[in-house]
Image 1 (tube, rainbow, N blue to C red):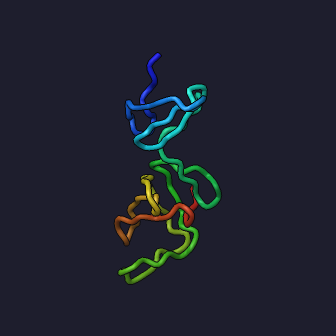
Image 2 (cartoon, rainbow, N blue to C red):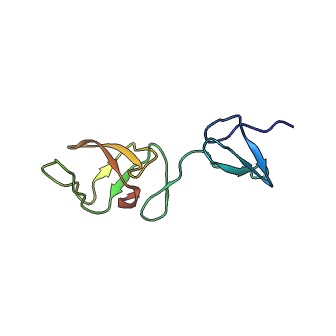
Length: 110
């Protein structure tokens, strides 16, 4: 039986460790029995709702922007978000500000 490639990074160097499969390149672990393997990035908003690419969100508090003359105000709607890895895990464009990176803990899904 050949082992499947890693679902996260597509590495072919997967090995078995007990009941789990392990990828040595990205350290991802999963089970062959697990049919609900979630692929991709899991990002939750301030209320615990799962966000996805293309969602519309609302900013829940005023956010100061370095180098900008004004803040992003509470209630600002942001359409068509893109999820990325890192500390600021939402990539978006905000009217009047341009391209921004936001933290998911300061937004809620609409």
